[in-house]
Length: 163
Image 1 (tube, rainbow, N blue to C red):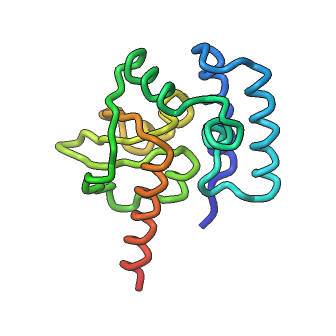
Image 2: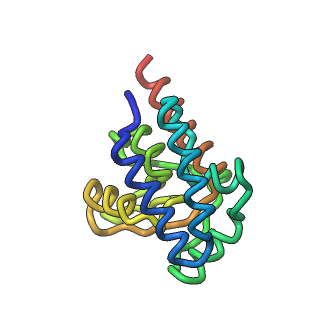
């Protein structure tokens, strides 16, 4: 199964715009990061890639800690480290959607879904998960590395279940 390119591109474009509007990033830096991201898209290297990874790792133009703190202070998202958390996504969770949105549902209690995301600031990301799971969502901000590990664990669980 492949990553939904349209969702991937919309998620990243909206994140970039939100970062500029929040004053976390100047427009010229976003333009350069978008050019690099387009190279990844053209090379069909989407899994584990995204605007945020370009900005934080390739260009070192944005601190992930600064972004996490901004989301917590300005948007009230909790911060979560999934290393010691038993992630329990709902049945049928598509890992490719998780990669495209840098988000993973981590639990569900009485119809309320809890999600960890590095792309909370991206409206298409929030809209995708709201449409899929409903309006009762609680969002947590998480680092890229934490999400990579969580989505890879999900992929491994699904692979083992299909054997």
